[in-house]
Length: 256
Ligand SMILES: [Zn+2]
Image (cartoon, rainbow, N blue to C red; front, side, top):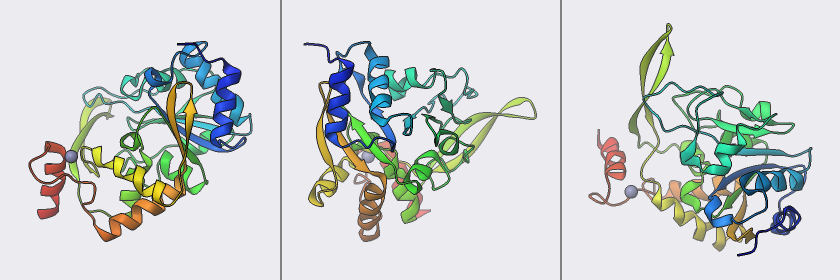
């Protein structure tokens, strides 16, 4: 396959509808996008050029290492993909200070990744919550809605009652200590239902970036669409009992 040049990527990004000067949260599977010139860095530069210096680029940067203390200067985020794990290391990119981190660059970066509560990772007072309030957009690049963290924000705003028990390791009085909390969570596979809900309402732009399927959606459209469905059926995202442990945990929490 031919590698896409930076200029070709920029054209694809703009054709999809990315707004110069806007806020863009990008979830990426680089294996679907490649080959592109200069690899993950080439893609990041194309996104930044399309957004212009007036825009703010945001990526997930969270760590799944529950037993390690998160350090925003050193802790990698390989589960978020190579583009995200390249992005937070770049000069000028800011990263939030807990394990549910996002990273960002641009005029609104400091506001979006400012300190957020560790035990309510995706509420209004979180990076995805701030992007929602600031009118940002979400780009799913070679990934589906099961990677779309903003759907957790919609669950939080809809007031769903299901939770799963989680813990993280933090420093307390200078010593590693487990912080236990309850998070709105499940296996998230059924977040892919959101694709059809958005298409039905014509709220999703689809195209290609590099070789990957790309979807562009306003954060506010994701939140409003999902909240409406959750008001009709709180457990719409949970699998029936006995399919997987995560959804079973979430269902069990509704009975306790
Ligand atoms: Zn499930």
